[in-house]
Image (cartoon, rainbow, N blue to C red; front, side):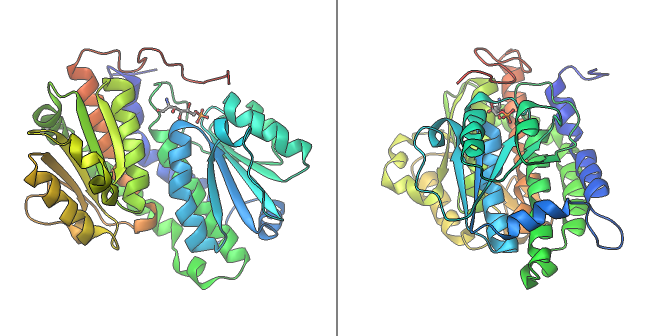
Length: 359
Ligand code: M6R
C-alpha cells in the first residue's frame, strides 16, 4: 500500500536505501563470501563477451553495468535493446553469455531475444524483481533484485537495484577469476555508502522541489548532459522526466553538444549537468560554460570530489563505477515534482503500461 504517501513513486524513491541494505544482506556475507550460484560463475568465466539485453530504464541500468563488468570482471560487454537486437542480431562472439535485465520479467521485446538464445542453446541469466516471471523461468539462471513490488510506471528502485546486483555479480565474477581489480572493489562498503548517500539526497527533497520549480516551470524542453558514467545516467534522467512530466527531455554526451544539439539552446533553456565522472569532469565544465554563454539555465549535480562553488546538488562519496545509484535520485525527484506541478497522474502516465507484454 501507499501508506501515508500520495504516490507510489515517491514511496519507491524513499525505499531505495533499504533496497541497498537488503541486496547487501542477501548476497554478501560478513566473512567476505558471497551468495551466488557457483554454476553461474563457472558458466560466466567461460564467456568471452557478455550481452546485456533490456528495454527502457533496465537498458539504462545495463549501460551502467557494462562499465562495472568491464572494470571489475575484465570481460567485454555489449548492451542491447531487445527490440533491436532480436531481429538484427549481430555476429555473436565465440562464447557469449546473456544477461536479461527486467524489473517485471515479462517484457516481450526481451523475451523474443531469450527465445532465440535458447534455440541457440546459449547460457543466460535473468536479473529480475519478479522471481517467477517468464524471463526468470526461461533463462538458465536467475538473480533477484529484491526491490520489493514496484507499482509506479516510472521505474526507480528497480534501476538502482539492478546496478547494485550487477556490481555484486561483477565482484563475484572478478573474484572467481582472481582479479586484483575485483579484490580492490569493496562492494559491501560501496552498497553501504549507496544507502547512506541516497538517504542524504531524499532528505533534501524540499530543496530539489524548489530547484524543479525554478528550472522546469513552463519549460517545454530540458537537457541532461554528462560524460562517461554520467552520459549513461543522463539517458535515464531524461527518460524519467519525459515519461511522467511530458517535458521533452534528452540525455546527451556532453561532448556531442557542439556537434548539433547546442543549436537548441536558447535564453533560459534548462540544462542539467552531471559531474561525477573524473575523467570527463573538466571537459564537462567547459561544456557548461559553452551552454551558459548561449543563455542556458544550468543546474549542476556534482560529486563531492569534483564540486565547485555554485553547484546546486552535491553527491556524497561513492565509487564512480556505481555512482549513478545515488546521482539518479535527484533526477527521479525532479521528474516527480515536475509531474506533480503539472497536475499529471504521476504513477500512471498517459499512454504507458507498467509492463510491456507486446512487441
Ligand atoms: O520490466 P522491465 O524492466 O523489462 O521494463 C522495461 C521498460 O518497459 C521500463 O523500464 C520502462 O522504460 C519504465 N516505464 C521506465 O520508467
